Image (cartoon, helix red, strand yellow):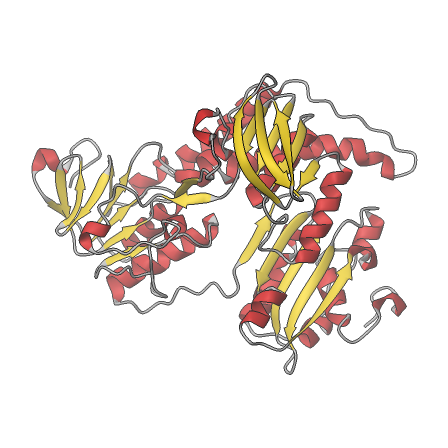
Amino acid sequence: MYTCCDTPSKRGNEHADLIVVGAGSAGFSAAITAAELGAKVALVGHGTIGGTCVNIGCVPSKTLIRAAETLHQAHAASRFSGIEAKGRLRDWSTLVAQKDELVASLRQTKYADLLPHYEGVTYLDGPARLTNGGVQVNGGLLSSDKVVITTGARPAVPAIPGIEGVRYLTSTTALELTRLPRSLLVIGGGYVGCELAQMFSRAGVEVTLVFRSRLLPEAEPEIGEALTRYLQDEGLRIRGGLSYRGIRNSERGIALDVVEGDIPKTIEADQVLVATGRRPNADDLGLEEIGVELLVNGGIKVDDRLRTTRAGVYAAGDVTGGDMFVYVAAYGARVAANNALNGDNRRYDTTAMPSVVFTDPQVAGCGLTEAEAKSQGLDVRTSVLPLEYVPRALAARDTRGLIKLVAEAHSGRLLGAHILAPEGADSIQTAVLAIKHGLTVTDLAETIFPYLTTVEGLKLAAQTFDKDVAKLSCCAG
């Protein structure tokens, strides 16, 4: 066996049943899956083990988002009569240090410490490059006719004139700040921009959030419009429909020159955070030289078995350029590893894939939006239920949000569910199961749901197709 300290370059060529390139969540998922199938696996990482989610993505961001939420909840406590509460940010650097401790702990326990438990997996650290014979690592060759690429993605940099001359933050470096700026310009209205803009605003930063089209452009428009209002109510400056003319350093910090409604304007702030999406890490892997085709967005082109255009080479996760969620990456990696070793018998299916944006209220969705369903030629019906009709929201004195359902018109089959609610993330899974198993909105409407829960809103939204829920008593129907 070779180890991380005994590379192929020292011992000559080594053979593996499967080589996994990339040691993040997807890479570990592929390696563990292959090891459980009895394969000899070479897992090749480069840099910090564990990938995006645990190190610079999900874990650190959601930790700080939850921390900032406690400050907001203290200020919002007065919505209940007779209650007064205060929250104060005493030391941001201490909070960041606590976040770093959690990241280090999870990286050790959920990644590094796992390797000894799988005898079939050998870990190597170094830049990898695919060749006709396998994968080159540290000057040596790992030979295999089966490779799974799981190298993830990185923050994308928008093509704004002057961006190369400005010290900008990304979703990675913003989470490393030990001192908060007085003001922050966030460029990008997707999920990363929304989450981090609200987090920094709740921590006391003056935040301006700008974007080219609308907030959360892939979500239902009702949800994007409502979330825009809620963020504005918290004090964020929201400016959409912009075109960017250039960005530059200024006396204040940075200045973004834009066109808003045909009028040239300038937006200034102490610092700028670029949150305009992510670009797949498919560079410098030698892919095109061996016949692996790339997409326009830089992702690796795959089919529904996660096969690339090169026989024996598979790809999964963010590097494919779509479905950039860690749990989907892990699922795809399992599919890819199984197919590489067992003859392509599993299909990559994200029909019932849930997505969550950890704003407050949270945005959670599954299945098709109304626009997506119509673009597929489907005849649909929709229902939109404001949260003021959900008893849980009334009891919590927080009616921010709505639930929208998309159903096939003739059958009633649920095609999509979209929730904007403070507890939306924990409510979407019921819709996931409904879509996965082909349930109708009538099935949902006739199912028993627990009272005074946010997920009960799915039942009420399903009833809304045929009833006026405002005329129902509690728990009726």
